[in-house]
Figure 1 (cartoon, rainbow, N blue to C red):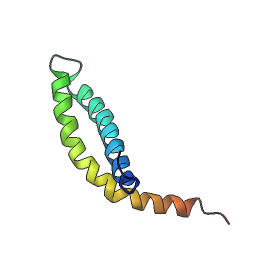
Figure 2: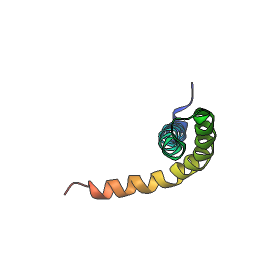
Figure 3: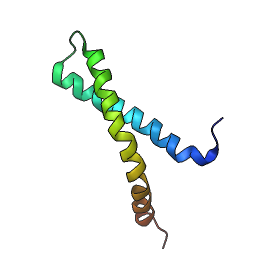
Length: 75
């Protein structure tokens, strides 16, 4: 089992993986249609997107948490 201290990194890995999978899939299908080879093209696009998305999530997530905390503060 993964130690709890790695939870934010694991969360970022999973979130960035799923979001980049979805967005790259939509963009790939919109660009080339549902043609032969679209799955292989999607996979390549997804992996390169994930390589950017994962570090971006790790950098941006703390900022987003602070913004949400400011926007939802009681009082």
